[in-house]
Image 1 (tube, one colour):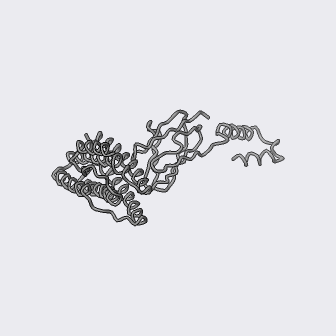
Image 2 (cartoon, chains in turn yellow, cyan):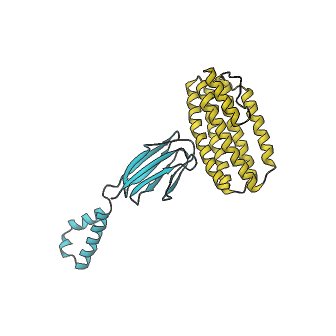
Image 3 (tube, chains in turn orange, yellow):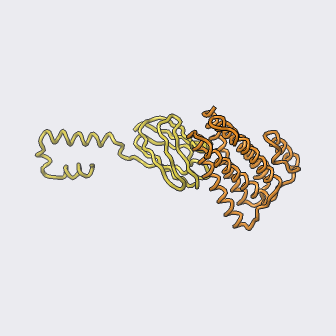
Length: 174
Length: 122
């Protein structure tokens, strides 16, 4: 288990900055809830930046959908943690996700028009890919509460859909 | 339409119809024959990003009704461009099948959702 988790985390580190590296420690349910919620909020913020900057209809439609879908998933996540009386707990993974997203937002802020669209959508593909890999290899297997696990599994399907949608948009804004 | 025709045939003056009216009645009867007598509505649910059943068999004239049980907007978009239905969260959407053939479709917003409609000629 430890080896498999470490291997999965190592693979994630190759995809992006070492956001999900936690010395191989298995995250707890309160930490998992916090990571999943944070990942959603960060994508909503990225979408809001795109809505403020982009003039491309396809990019704006995608960003609108990200706001709607992630808001809905996070609404369900909040309702679940309330029901389960789990208090989401800040952790290194949430913190590095937030830090990395802030850096990306600053980088994107300097771009305009086509260059912005391309960079935003490329980052959406990469971001969903990273989060999905983390859900699949670490967060879902580590979740001990079955309802939390089930919500994460549905979330994974939604985010895999987003990743494919982002790939289609990326091909169009090239 | 059908009940009107039945009422007509039950009336005593049917035998007294003029040739023009007979042709008219025949045309209606023909039109009724060419419309499938048992057009069905086939339901497909969208639940947790899955079309169920993923594949349905239908015939020309049938209607496909998608029932979106998710709290997200989905679409049923034919890959051949024949139809594109937007189905808001917790709502339904329909399409009438006009052409025979197999149509693969997906959700434009979550392309990992895939389905297929096989339409037989009437």
